[in-house]
Image (cartoon, rainbow, N blue to C red):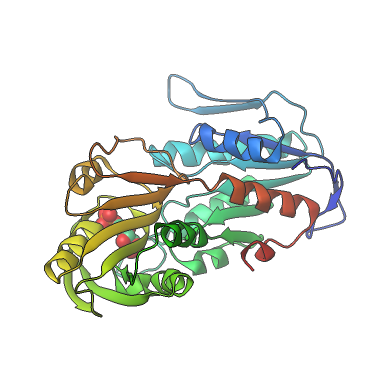
Length: 329
Ligand code: R5P
């Protein structure tokens, strides 16, 4: 697909934006390249470096005056450096007279800090939104936010894509006979129901408890019947693997025939590679919204589904003023 429509109008004003220009920070260049390959256009040239004092420096090597600029940067480890790179890229693009700037953030870090649920704690997801806007972004394109209401933390348009249909299609092709889709936490029930409906499967929900502010969880109970069924646990992200592994153990103890695990965002701390590389689960499926930076899985079968075509199609629709929602109808 060639982004042939050279002129589109911003919903924000009467400006006319010329061609698309796509750039990557240092978070996930392979994804940005795959998006550009899908769009049949080159990835733009841009230096994103650090001085010896760790200050971030950015310089666009292409002219981007009046261009429709897309900056691809999921917020992966080292999270605060990648965030700073994004802010500085947006600022540099603004000062280079870009026509419109879309921050393409396939994984929005700090999403779990989305409410003040204890005394004297921050709402960091809101703070990050403020920074992205203040830096000068005109729009945000993201995938499966931890909580949908994070969209409302922005005063600029946010397009939130979902990779759940990709995951559902994958498991439809696996062809389990009567699978049960399992939410590893009550908060994940809507997501799991989405997949269950797409697969025509039953739904089960685990009652998970988090132990204080530590990264440890416990699966306390199960609503639903998994005895003799192939189970598919679906979560938005995996960090330490604690949530998933306690769910896997509970389902195996309740007689599941097999347990597969799927998530959109493989945040994967080093611990996750130890915890999840286990014969207790039969398969691990995730997307490439993030690169794996802390290790690899050695024995558990893994499948990576690419979100590059989804992001590319959404960017093209944003550029040409098409409906992004229509991608999911
Ligand atoms: C929590 O609400 C999320 O949906 C995930 O369950 C959580 O982020 C996973 O973290 P971990 O892998 O450390 O248990």
